[in-house]
Image 1 (spheres, one colour):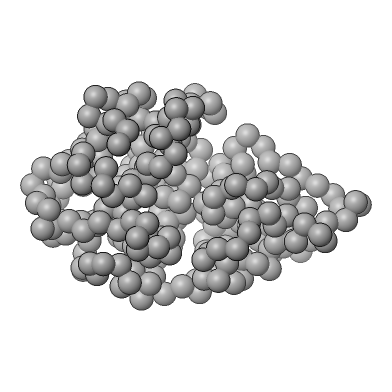
Image 2 (cartoon, rainbow, N blue to C red):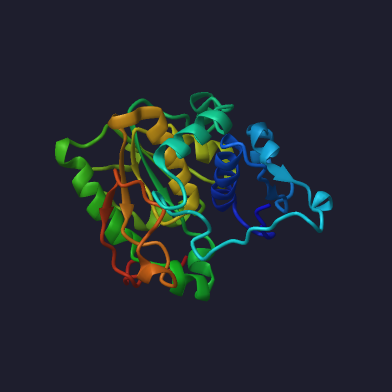
Length: 265
């Protein structure tokens, strides 16, 4: 039994469910204690529920496994690529990403580059900002420059929990507002997820939501998938180095402290 606690976001939960799925695939009886409550994820991915144990069914004699400092998220240490691919195929294939993404307003266009920006409490909460914050504007600009070396893409989708901040602060060379659409809380979490997870080219930030969407995009597109990610996750673990990254992703260094152009809105 893998113990958990209330308040974990779905990205963190998916790593725990991956661990349980792998154990069950090897014939071991392994579940995750369900303390996550209702939400759109449960309806969209019903096969995840088979990996959860309601708290009332936890027996005194059940063997317990506690979360480590990396939350079982270390790529190549806590899980392998085949294990990840099997989990995505078996548990996260219920959703038609293209169909769900069509519910965004405006609707997606072909061959979009998707930029996924995590703001929220990472920047509104001073303690979280000290742990997770970095200069997003500088990082995205550098990733965009690399991505465009083969020619600028025809259109862009920026997916964020704070699209207003993105409109105000992100200025990409050669891109006009008419070529950019924004997907955010008003569209719903599943639409945001599908928009990122269906993309062939991605720029992501230090969020487990981003990581899992990128994993699914990699499963979908294979070698054609291109992902840029910050070489940073959180300052309190491994000196900030991320442990969740697929080695195929292109890591870019970041400024560890937010710069003048990256202020809380």
